[in-house]
Length: 87
Image (cartoon, rainbow, N blue to C red; front, top):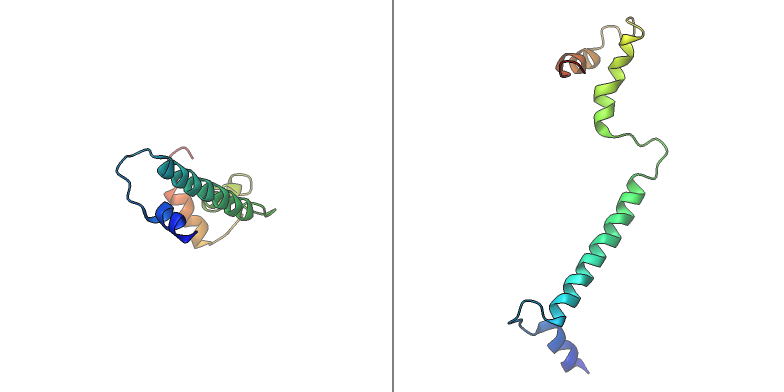
């Protein structure tokens, strides 16, 4: 029983697309897809998840509505000055 399993797992491949290569490649892609989808679902399932660029490029824009917002805030001033023209 061990010999066929060992042959399946350790036999060298001379051809590119043997059934063994296709099987193991498909299995590895399946595991990759399943676990990446599980990780993404966990990462983005929170109610307050925000894309990281939004925090640095959008929060200071409330100054357009209220010019007195964030007085002497160096971080807001920095992100406002490094924003691209027309942003």
